[in-house]
Image (cartoon, rainbow, N blue to C red):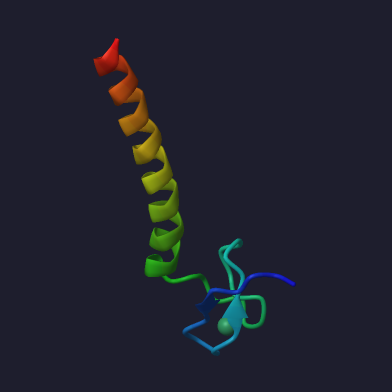
Length: 59
Ligand SMILES: [Zn+2]
């Protein structure tokens, strides 16, 4: 079962987190939806950077 977090603003179809287009009407994902996925990546990268900086400061 695929995870479907977002609704298509054009037809209301539930879209998967992956993929840039609606599976039903092929409308492009909205910017907030793409931003949400980018935010998850940014938070993960930020946490890695903070941990790395902490290690450097301790040495
Ligand atoms: Zn749609």
